[in-house]
Image (cartoon, rainbow, N blue to C red; front, side, top):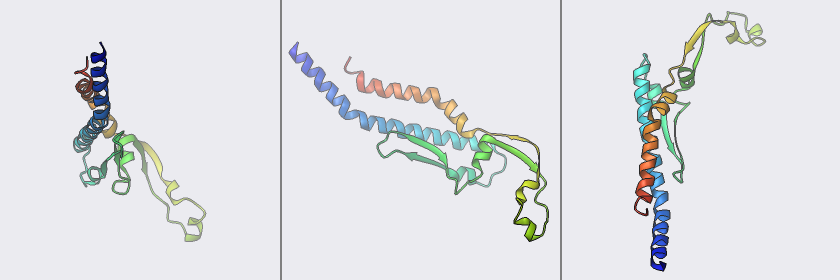
Length: 150
């Protein structure tokens, strides 16, 4: 009985030692899968191809491996949130007014909203599409760590 408890204790110590590396690997793999899926969604759902939306997709992994974030770099593609979430369609532009009057009014406020452009949801759809796969990867990682114990 005492020997089996010592073996169990050693197994738990080994599991605790291996968990941070396994978690980091899992998070990095999940982030890479998300990034690939977002890039694929951008390629298939958008018509204009300047490359800025694709270049703006970045992957950030936490220093401890606790998270991975796939997000847009606003310096490269500052319009990505408009494509992702949708936006008002505005026709007409600023009226030509004397410079003195321009200082008192917002020149962007003269256009008329004529409709709504629906969002493409490239990031959200990637997360929804990969949810089951990522859960399966996490379960597999836990099974590798704990499976030998029980």
